[in-house]
Image (cartoon, rainbow, N blue to C red; front, side, top):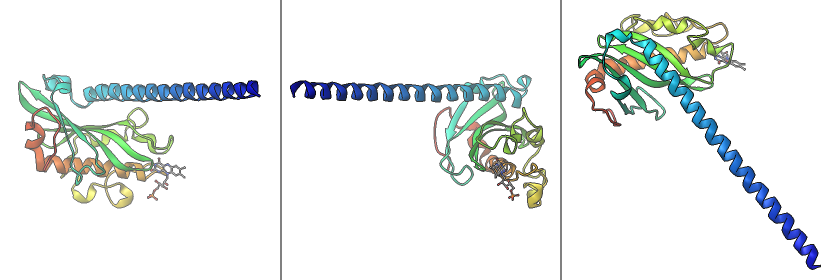
Length: 214
Ligand SMILES: Cc1cc2nc3c(=O)[nH]c(=O)nc-3n(C[C@H](O)[C@H](O)[C@H](O)COP(=O)(O)O)c2cc1C
């Protein structure tokens, strides 16, 4: 009787140990995966920041001249926007907004939106997304040059009606069988330009820190 109880106790203890080790292993793998994704995204951001603003146009450290804010009207769903400032001998040259298009087919599409001091776009890049391969992923510069079409655009170029995909009466192409993804990106870029037009000095002059726009 006693030995049966001992055996039962041993089995239960072994099972509990396996469960604890399994859980710890899973937690470790999860943390590693998250760290790796965060590192990949950081690398993508660094690479793409360099593609957006020509290095001969500024001489500050973009990575150290930044601040973050939230503004639900222009950057919905509680996202935090990080603003990198490019300056030449201290003079404002451009900002890059690290932000998201929130209405993608599969959720958020993370973007870098570069805006010159005069309000023209110096470029847009996607840093990560969950859109469908072969459909929505044509927003990646590596797959399609669609995203390059933002270069040189501004709030008045195209005029307000043109800031939509062609299917909605605008000037931007959609993709074959995929309108939702480009629609979300066009809308997010337009909102970023509107925010820039309204809050340019906030973007350039806010100290390097995390804060809220009003
Ligand atoms: C499995 C599946 C995945 C899809 N993935 C995307 C996608 O990533 N991006 C996208 O724009 N449309 C995607 N679509 C197509 C959309 O549902 C939609 O039909 C398309 O974007 C056209 O939108 P519209 O009718 O508003 O023009 C997908 C459809 C299916 C069935």
